[in-house]
Image (tube, rainbow, N blue to C red; front, side, top):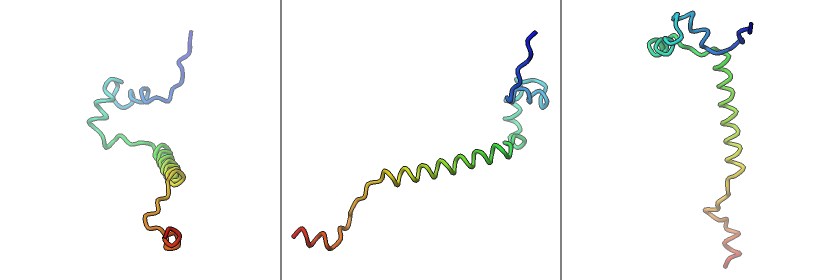
Length: 80
């Protein structure tokens, strides 16, 4: 006889709340105030977003090209 594999999915937790797995989607829709992410998950995502923003900023600064809109006066003197 095979053993049931342990899972971290929400499907097993659903039976506690509603009694039927099919009802979970409807229950979540009807009770958005009771559906809250865990503190650990929220902190993890916040950390990921900050890291992603920092990487994006670093990438933009590294790949940015410098445009001289107002050339310095020393360069103007060399041209004439």
